[in-house]
Structures are given as structure tokens and as C-alpha cells.
Image 1 (cartoon, rainbow, N blue to C red):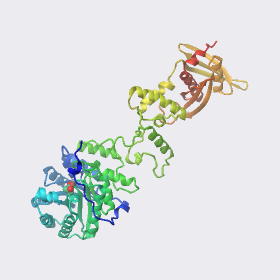
Image 2: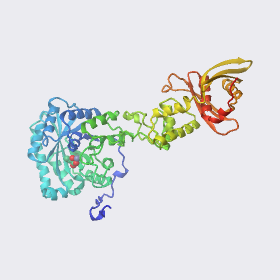
Image 3: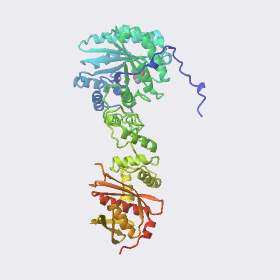
Image 4: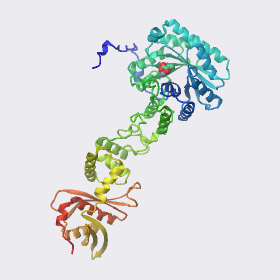
Length: 564
Ligand code: KIV
Ligand code: ZN
């Protein structure tokens, strides 16, 4: 039993903002993105990245389209310091990309940080100190005034130091760490003080990064906090409001989306939600959420699998199979009703129309995924999924009643094995039950002939070791074959007949035609399908009839009389 929560935890108090605007806003454009994969993401790994991995990921982030990338914490790690130097001295930074580095608000660390950036064209210096009562009282024993003074003195020091390097365009970012657990009026006071110390103007904006360092409340609270700041900051036109949500409650994406509606301009996070503890907000989900609302995310995830594999290699952490938009299973339906709806959705979807396929919020092709894994068959699946795979992988478009019949056959196999069926497995079962069955009868060859107005046929059939020619006439080859069968005691009736050409994905070699025949013994109600595949449509039809006879079973054989 869990403890009584009220004796141990306190609910986060609501924010007083009765005229809040964010609930009726929508996001209509991409925010400024900042990837902190190489900093917050990296500092949370079992094994932080080496410089080779960092460089590969940096280049991938540039390719995806990030224009601001936090590349490390140079005063905290020699690897990070060297990496920043490597990026600058080896010329790895594209002209439209700005690197960012983090430093605590402490003099010697700030000096080392600025040193690491020597020679860079443009850089964001990111200074932080914690502001919440928990940190002021428990961790640092500092008063509010002392916390503000620390931030202001640090910003003034940065200002002095960067003035010695006019060859670089400098941007200041300040984070009141633990912002979302800080009293709003105090967060406002420190942000205004820092903005003044930097002498921010509309043409030289300061980035105020307002983190949910530990996510502690429902997403609407974070949105209220951001809207409150947005409305109260003294020099709003000289400020870029940045979000830095962590995911401790599993709602970082929701919090970020609502906070963007509340007036924020910028989002910091990591690919696939890497970062301390439960991670930073996932920038892939954020971007693709925008995309599926018709908003250009300005980040290119058109080959999201390649990005995922690279991130896995660099972080040694696997992407979860159900991770939104990128997990191995997220475009897969096992359940029969889902498969049926998806199949209908695909059939109805016009190439240039608005995407409208049930259960698939995103066209897998948009992120470089194929449709191959959309339908998979296990014991939860139904005829729809099986029919889909038979059509799309093997080129067999089954009539509806055959879909039902074959689904029952597959189900028997599944009950026996208890395992998922691959499309290969389905083909093998289909082949075994419909195409390759030779008992009791097997087709050998046939000849057509004319007799007056009638169509004649001679068919050589095997019955076990014996071969027999049977002959009949009718108003077409199939009718003639039915008469030939009747003459040897096999009295069957054709209930349905369909022939289809096979698509290019056909598994049956060069075969071009597929015939489906549904037969019942005269006087009996049990019907069963037979399927024949051949380059020649008449041969395919004869094979389909024999396949169906074989599936009708014993009653047919009992009546069979040897042909003379
Ligand atoms: O989570 C956080 O508050 C941080 C700060 C350094 C911005 O990572
Ligand atoms: Zn963080």
C-alpha cells in the first residue's frame, strides 16, 4: 500500500491569473529551438559522449536544422572545454548556427567559459543560479537579495569579459534555475534585474530561460507561470522567453505546448527526451506534433529512423518501441478492428488530400517509414490485416468471403504457435492450403476443343498415383470442366467465381492471373474456396476448382468414379 499522500506531499498551489489568455490560443509557428543534447542530455548519460560522438551528433543537429545548440559545460568538464575549442578552431560551426555554453554564476567558472569561446563568430553564454526557496534556504542559505546580487554580479562580469572580444557577437542567456518552483514575484525581480544589468534592448535581446528544472505541477500551472511572466516583465520587447521543461511528471510536452500558447518564444530540449532523470522535453515529439497540426516545425525529421539510430549509438540508450512518431511499433496495428479501419483509410486516401487514415496521426512516409510494418498479424488480428498483407506484400486481392475463410485458417495456426505471423508465414499457409494442395486431386494439363457451338475440354488430373483424362462440354471452359467432373461422379456447383490479375509485388513468380472459385457439393450447403495461380487464366481457373475440390474433402472423393 502507498502511504497516505496528504501526509507526505503537498499539491502545487494554483496561480492567480483569472484572465489567462493561453487556453484560447493555438500555436501557429515554430518556436526558436535550442538543442541541449550535448549538454543537459550528455550530463545525464551513464557514459558521457566522447568528442567524436559529440561532433557526429553536433553535425546531425545542424543537418536537422537547429540554429542554436548548447555544446557543453566547459568550466565543468575538460572534455567539454576541448570540444568547444575543437568546434571553433577546426571550423565545424556553420555560419547560421550559434553555439551555446553553460556556466554557473561563479566568477572563475565564468572566466573559463568565456575563454573557451575565444575566436567564435557568435555565441550564447548561459549563466544560471537556483532561485527557489528550497535552494535558497536548504542548499545555499542565501537571502533573496543575495541570490539577486549573485545573478547581477555574474551578468556584469560576463558583460565586462565579452567586451574584450568584440570580434564575437555575444548573446546572454540567464536561467533562474528551479524557476517553476520559485515565487513568481521573486522570479520577476531577478529577471528584471538581470535584464537591466545586461542592458538588453530590442536589438540586443537577452534570453530569459524559465526552466521547470523539476516538473512539479500540472502543465496548466507552467503555462500560467509563463503567461504571468510574459505580462509582467519590464522590458518584454528586449527579451526572448525560453522554456526548459523537464519531464518528471511525464507531461513536459504538454507543458511546453501550453507555455508556448502563453507567450514563450523559444524551447530548449533534447532529441527523444534525453536529459537529467526523466529527461528534457522531447524535441522530436514537439516538432512532429506541430507538423501534424499543419505547422512547419522548421526541423527536418524526414528520416527520423536515421536520427534515432545515431542518437542510440551516441547515448547507448535505446528509443522505446512506443516512443511517439519514431518507436518501432508506433505505426503498427495488431488489432483486427484497427487494421480494418486503416485498410479502408488507405484505400480512401487521395495522394494530395489532407491525411485522414484512422489510427495513424502521421503518414509514416513523412518521417521516412515504410508501410510494411503498419499491419502485423497476431492472435488479436482479424481478416482485415491478413487481407492487407496478402494484397500489399503478395499481390493477392482476396474476395471478402475468402478473407473470412482464410482468417480462420490462419487463426488455427496462430492458436497452435501462439506467435506473431510474418507476411512470409501468411504466404506459406496460403500456399499450403490453397495453392499447393495435391490431395486427393492435382491438375496436370488440359486441352480445349470446339464441338459445334459447345466448348469442349479434356483435363488430365492426378488422383494419388493414378492419372485420368476427363472430358466435358459446356458453354465455356469452366462449365465444360464442371460437366467433365459430373461424369466421374463429382457433382459440384460454382457459387462464385472471380479472376484477378496479380500486382507487381506478387510472390508467385511470373504468374499473372489468380482465380478464386467457391464450390459446394450439389445438395449441400458447405462452401469452400479454391485458388489457382497461373500465367494462363483458364489454367488458373481449373487449378482453383481442383483446389476447392480438395478442400471440400471426403464427400467428393467418395463419389468419385474412375474415368473409363
Ligand atoms: O534544468 C535546468 O534548470 C537546467 C538549467 C541549467 C537551465 O538545466
Ligand atoms: Zn535542465
